[in-house]
Length: 351
Image (cartoon, rainbow, N blue to C red; front, side, top):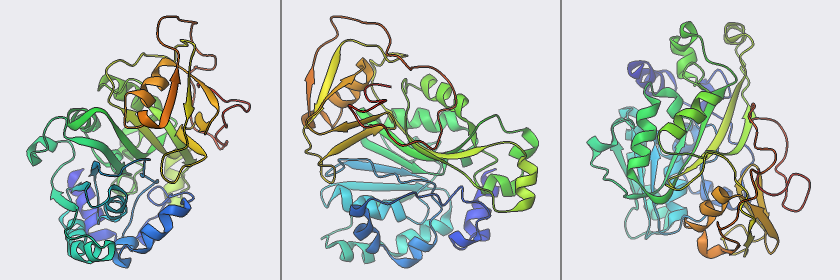
């Protein structure tokens, strides 16, 4: 499978227009503050982008960010502007042809960003074996990845390595392609379906269980959208399987519970995170308006209190009392076409 991926992305694809589905080009609506950042990225880097989401979590200034499967470096160069000159972005990819493009424009972007020296570097290697690249334990603040983990046969190894290199309170924030059922082996082995990010897609519930086994107890869905297959032959082969591009955030926190437990706690967002003065979106079910008391479960409180977000919130309550589980914490296909519920509106609050 590695050879298939390297050939597909190193030789078969020359730009995003060569893709036969939209699985690897579903960016969604770009926030306004991102557009001028993208405008500074070289056109060749933009044209060879194969991502399936927006992997730009909030509050990155001064942090060390690792991009797993960075390709030609589009996200790296956007993130390098968000972390600032004092931060650092490390891109890892196994395809030499793509890394060659990324490295070709290092100095171009340094000058475009006005930095004295580049804060981006690129490493050639496998994202399942970060230890071979001398990425040490607890050295990374945030990991991002954009439509790459589905291409890796050993997905558990990627998650284990992510847990290892993340600092406590750090997060894995990534977009990928998922399916509503397990992919039959005959389709999983198809080189075109695999290269198009469909053959290696995880059944969403298998992903959630895998993430929990690797230490990420409470995966949080950020957003999702259906994948369309423009090639009639591929659509015929995949039949009734539904695919989704989805973004998850997974926090490295040791004290999370398996479910959303109600301890009578709440949080108030101060409105102080850059580019987000009115609303902080933790995940698809937690859109927290500035200045409004927002009921949270114990896990959500820890995701806000025990991470880089702490100073931007006021917290109320503790873990002394327990009121049972929050309503609505059931199972089922998590993806839909609905909007995020605002705190205080219908569907607000935890879960």
